Amino acid sequence: MGFFAKQSVLILFSLMHFALEARQCPDYSDTPTAELLGYLDDRDERTRSTAAYFLGFRYQQPQALNVRPPFYDPKKIAPVTVQVPTNVVPKLFATIQKDSELSVRLAALTALENMSFRTNAIPLVTQCLTNSMRLVRLRSCEILIKYCDTRGEQWPSIIITTLADCLSPTGSPDELYLAVYSVGCLETKGKPLIPFLEKLRTHPSNRIRISAIEALGKITKSL
Image 1 (cartoon, one colour):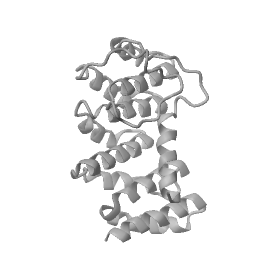
Image 2 (cartoon, one colour):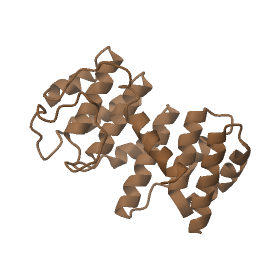
Image 3 (cartoon, helix red, strand yellow):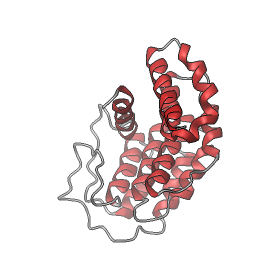
Image 4 (tube, helix red, strand yellow):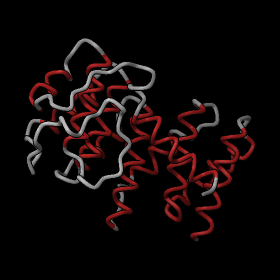
C-alpha cells in the first residue's frame, strides 16, 4: 500500500472520529431511535455528534467494515428494522445544514453515508456539496465518488466545481489535503483539475506536494 492509499485510510478515520477522539462519550447502543433523534437537538456538542454516529451504526449495512468507537456495544443495540424510519434521514440532513459545530455535521453526514444501504440518502448528500462548511463539502465529495464508483454510476458534475473551489494553495492544509485526495479518486475524470494540482507541486507542505504528485499520477495513468 502506497503513501496515498495509507493516508486515505487515515483521512476517513479522523473524520469519523472527529467528535469522539479523546472524549468520554455516552453509550447509546440500546437507546431507542426516537430518543437519539431528540439528542440531535441537545445543547451539548458531544451528545449530538454521538447520537448521529449511533444512528448511522444502527442502520448501516450489516457486513459493512466500518470503524466503530470503543464504547459501541453490538450486544446491547436495539433491534433494527429493515427500513429506516421516515423521520431519520430528514432530521440528519437538517443537522448537517444547520448545526453550529463541524463535528456534529460530519457525524450526521457519516450517518447518511452508512444508511445509503437501506435508504436513498445520496440525493441529500449531493445537496451537501453546497454546505456552508468546506470540510462538509469535501467529505460529501468523497462519499459520492466512492458511492458512484462502486455502483458504476455517473457522479454529479458539481463535484469538479466543489473540489476546484477547495484547491487554493493558501487554504487550510487539512482541507487542501482532503481535496487533493478526492481529486485523485476521480482518476481520468479529474483531468479538468490538473492545473490546480500542478500549482500544488511547489506547495510549502511536503505532505501536500507528495499528495498532489500522486493524484496527478493517478489521473494521467488513466488517460
